[in-house]
Image (tube, rainbow, N blue to C red; front, side, top):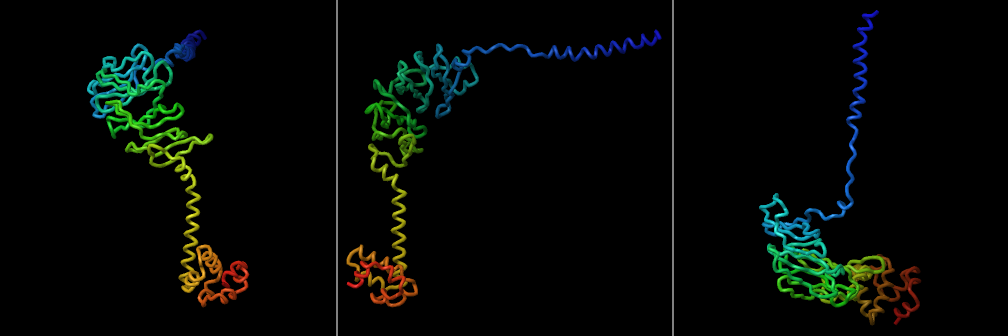
Length: 322
């Protein structure tokens, strides 16, 4: 008996150790408490953003912070992969962040920003060495919006909108970024809200607001967009339907003349004007094709059948009898 107890002791010990191991693993694998992410990390500027290659591919421009404000930096493409903080900073704006920019040629960068938080954005240009900073729209109280940067079309010009003439509306100008010269391209008649260009930089689509519904007009924009032209475009479906009706009447008249050639001479002889000719033609169209083969004199036209004769009004009968 004693020997049996001694033999059972190792087995019990092994069982107790095996049962204790899962509990030990469970305690060891319990997740550690993660540190909370500071709220400021959600709102701070990124270390770098908005990378853009120059047209030749020799330089890379991007935004990175300078004293907490996003500014433009430039580095050679051959330096990609190195420390971005060693890139050439071309702007030193501390009032507001620069949020957008684009290349014009291989040596010039164009960006927009407002001054003092007034939301009146202006256009600026600077070279890749951080020199020759120019304010291209030096108009106090005027807001600028970019319509087309004319990428791959013209490296010296951009299309912009300015509310220079009237604060409520934007006219389209072509701006030379080298000289700052402005040329009026399209004058807003007062109700267009946006302009869309084609691949050649020509304005093709104009958008306007009518009530709560935006409407787009397709057409070539000139210096002055006519309001009458816009309403004419809206009436095109009705004009098309009217044109189809005229063509249909003309085709029926041709069929009538083809089946009964004498009907043409009757219309020319009796029709003193277009109105009377149309009355005769409409009356004769009601006659069946078999009846048109016979000689269509006035007495015959009135005797071709009750249906045809009764369909003529008294006014038409008097006209036939003249």
